[in-house]
Structure formats: C-alpha cells, structure tokens
Image (cartoon, rainbow, N blue to C red; front, side, top):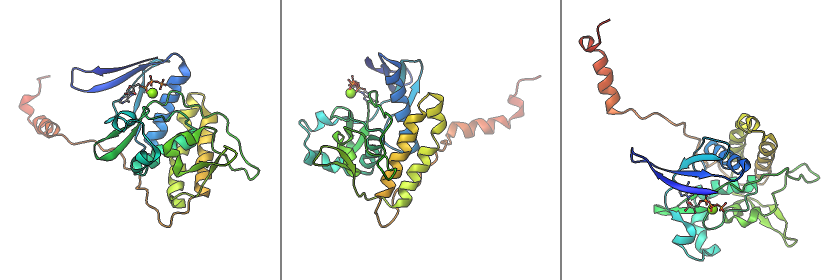
Length: 243
Ligand SMILES: Nc1ncnc2c1ncn2[C@@H]1O[C@H](COP(=O)(O)OP(=O)(O)OP(=O)(O)O)[C@@H](O)[C@H]1O
Ligand SMILES: [Mg+2]
C-alpha cells in the first residue's frame, strides 16, 4: 500500500492511497460514508479506482507523536470529546481493531480525527439469545470504543450502559439505515445490517437523561461575493454576446 500527500496547484492538500487489495479501498470508502452520515471526524473519501482513493487531509498530528507512549489516562480528555464519542460509534459498530495511536490525530483545541480504516472488517456478527448483536472481537482495543463496551473477565467484549439518550441513538440508527443503498451497491449489505444492529444494541444501553447529540447540519453552499457580482453582471444586457 502507498500513502502520499499531494500538494495541488490550487493550494489544497489531499491524501492519495493505493491499496494492495480492493477490499481495503472498500473499507476506507464505506467507513467514510458511515462517518459522514453521523458527523464523525473521519475523512471524506473519493474512490477513483478499485484500489485507488483520494481523501481529505485530517488536521493535527498522530496521537502517538503528540503524546508519545500514549496511556489511557493521557488519552482520556481526547476520548471524552464529542468527536471521540462519534469515532467510538464507528469503532464499536464496525469492530475496528486498528485504532492504534497512529490511526487517530489530535489537532488544536484537543479535537480528534480518525484516519486509516483500510483494515476494518465488519464480518457477519453474532447475536445473543435475545437477538442483540454483540460487539465484535477486538473492538475494545480502540480507546474510543470505551463509551460503548468493555471486555469482561473472559476477554469477551460486552455492551455497557452509555450516556446517550435513546433519541440520540435513534438518530444515529436513522442515519445508518439511510446508507443501505451505498453499502448494497458495493456488495456489503451484510456489513450494513451488522452496523445497524450494533447501533440498536447501543440504543438498548442508552440511559442518558436528555437528548444531547446535535441534529445533523445539512451542508449549505457558501454564497461568495464573486457570485453576487456575477449575477449583477448578468443583468447587464449590453455585456451579452450578440446572437
Ligand atoms: N486522511 C489523512 N489525513 C492526514 N494524514 C493522513 C491521512 N491518511 C494518512 N495520513 C498519514 O499517513 C500515515 C499513514 O497512513 P495510514 O495510516 O492510512 O496507512 P498505514 O499506516 O501505512 O496503513 P496501516 O496502518 O493499515 O498499515 C498516517 O499515520 C498519517 O500520518
Ligand atoms: Mg495507519
């Protein structure tokens, strides 16, 4: 796999990744789609080929460089941000076991950003006797998953009571349900179903007293001054080319 930073002529900087297998690019793309739906701090991905993609440059530097030898205590203030919580939703729902200290970044103001979802493999998932989808093995290796699950004395991941209000969880579920077509189109409906079911499990354990996740903000176009001047020009009929 190759990862490079591209400096474009317009001043933008993007990351280009070329994978050794299609499934790694699928995982980057699908986790990005999930992340955008729930407003989690992960890069937007543009898939350009079976194994090639471009992605947003995430701010900050790898956590492992900002806080060398990162301990759970040192990570705690970052894990407890809203961004950290949403990154944890991704890690818990997808059973991401690759959120090591170089796969998330810290930027100014203590904000966190997730990168590198190439090795995410949601797998088929296992339900308990009550039909509740269990967390995936290894998901507790993500510090962000601690919002949702713990590893018990038998080293199995189990859900725990969380601080979401059921309405917050419902909102996450609604967003996840809405991405079915994206997953289906890429042949990953089984991933989609497990993600939705894990969010439903999180809802079962949501015991917060009041809803607090902000409603998703629809992206709005920015009105640029240049557009205004262009529109005023368009009323200047004398400037139109003659037919
Ligand atoms: N979207 C991004 N924004 C900012 N930096 C990035 C981004 N993607 C990758 N990087 C930088 O490139 C480095 C390597 O990228 P990445 O973690 O995706 O691949 P990798 O570590 O080589 O793969 P793997 O962890 O699967 O072996 C990261 O540690 C980070 O410094
Ligand atoms: Mg990495």
